[in-house]
Every structure is written in structure tokens, then in C-alpha cells.
Length: 102
Image 1 (tube, one colour):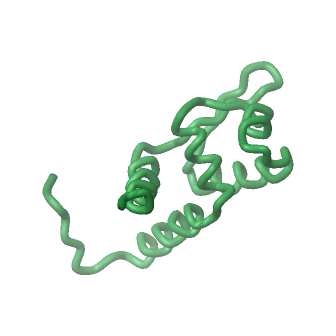
Image 2: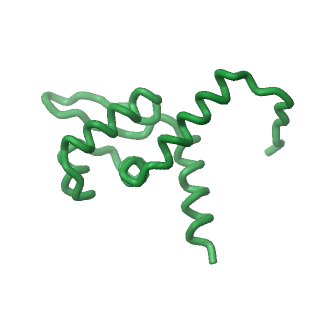
């Protein structure tokens, strides 16, 4: 894969990149995203698996949705979440591999 060189980045691009990196800097959001990379989940399933309150998960999902990092589909009264973009998975996965590398 050829690396692209960007001599000048648009301010909007820099701002959006900063927002995404900020989103990935929160432990709860990392847990949620990592779980969503494994499987599509309802909020109640995330509460059960992650041991985080429903209100905290809902708040973080709203934050991630606004950044277009997660998406959802509705089935009856239940919302099922998954990640929006493979690139975010790649970024988080590279960071985790770096951290776990000895």
C-alpha cells in the first residue's frame, strides 16, 4: 500500500481527525468499540458483557454515533449497534497490537 503524502491538511480534516482520536482515548469507548468489532450488540448485551451502566453506555454510544464511528438498526423496541467504519477498527487494532507487543 502506497503512503499518501499530504503536505497541507485542511483545517476541517485536522479537526475531524482530532475528534476521532479523542473518541478513541476514552477507556469506556475503547471497550464498547472493541466489543462491537466482535459482534453486533444491543445496549442490554453491552451492559451485561462490559459491566457498565446502561446510562453510561447510551451516553457513549450517542457520542460515537455523532462521530459516525458506530451505527445502529432497530428491531422492534431494540437497537442493535455495530461499528460504522473498518478504518476505525484498523486504528484501534494497531494501537492494541502495539500495546500488547513485547
